[in-house]
Length: 90
Image (cartoon, rainbow, N blue to C red; front, top):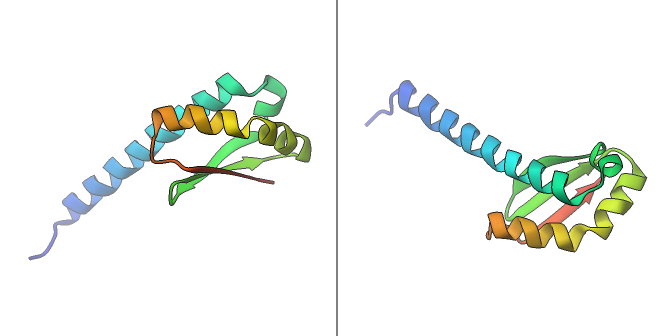
């Protein structure tokens, strides 16, 4: 049986909306735990296979974020228990 394009589009939009909500939660956690100077350079890149990947715009921000990595993981696990790891890349 063929799937209507309308149903496919609704499913995709629902998935995108859910991903946006999750990313907003992660952004708020980053705002809470990182200082303002570091936060300017750190953003959520993607979430894949139980891993949150953050992008660091500078090596100093990468260093500061790595110092808070375990604390970040603990707080993120409260919101999303399926997350097992955080990777921070430049």
